[in-house]
Image (tube, rainbow, N blue to C red; front, side, top):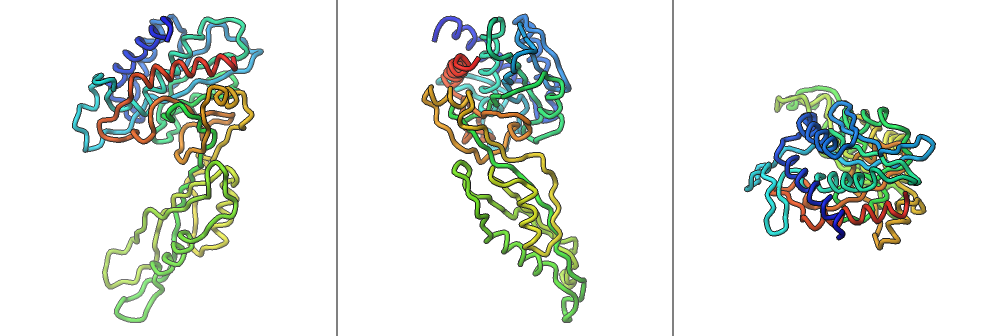
Amino acid sequence: MNEQHQQLSGKVIGLLQKLIATPSFSREEGKTAGILEDFLSSENVKTSRAGNNVFALCKHFDSSKPSLLLNSHHDTVKPNAQYVRDPFDGAIEDGKLFGLGSNDAGGCLVSLLACFLYYYERTGLNYNLVFAATAEEEISGSGGVEFVIPHLPKIDAAIVGEPTLMQMAVAERGLMVLDCVAEGKAGHAARNEGENAIYKAMADINWFNQYQFPKVSDLLGANKMSVTVIETSNKAHNVVPPSCQFVVDTRINERYNFEEVLEIIRANVKSIVTPRSFRLRSTAIPLDHPLVKAGITLGRTYYGSPTTSDKALMPFPALKMGPGDSARSHTADEYIYVREIEEGIQLYIQLLNQVV
């Protein structure tokens, strides 16, 4: 690591400790947005803000050139009950930086920020660089990346910072949540009356459990449907329930669109099926995209990610890649290795050096 990289690493690791020390639960990111604005201003970077989203353009922005977005989020989930350490401590011990949001996705955020600063004043680049620290990622909220994109210049591609061990997540499963209602007819349980909606729901639930979609993705595997909630409004033990509601978590590969999956489901079940949203669609960046080709040159592997990120909300090609390990996300006593951040900065810079 050269001297400039070391200086950048030291600055942004200190920034990450400040961010960890400041609670930033989804929809409550105002204070960390302010910290990010102050940091960028201290680096003589002109910043803008839309809600709790903070963004900046490279110094020599040229509207005739394509633009590459460097994006990660600064909101966190709430700490779970198994924390032993103070989740807002931000201490470094034995090479580990501890704290809520350190791994998901603070390390990615500050590594991308360091990369942006590295190129900020460069001239003659093939791409404009745009940095955005966004809100509400953990809840896929409407006040996050969706809200800020209209405030940005036209974006042609993006790197989305999420913990992937600096490997390349080139595809992501989509998420469609379905609210299902099986309808029956009320009756007295002691007499042979009514139509039990639970039994009707069970038949449909069995279909969800057994059906296999024929088109399997090389990157993301098969579509997966999981019934996760079931209930009736009836609380009396002696009344046959007239309706039964259940929820299906549907993870969809890039070989299907949501409308096609919904049509298949409705043709095979008797329950009324209502999707909550079509927002979090499956995505894939072409393997011959310059970002992916640059990563392969650097020895990075590529894979399909089972988890959903802000990549799903971007109407342009996006590569999910960042320091840290997804397996540590949302765990008690969350941490990221300092060396992972340092390596992340170097790899981001090396990746962009081939592209921009």
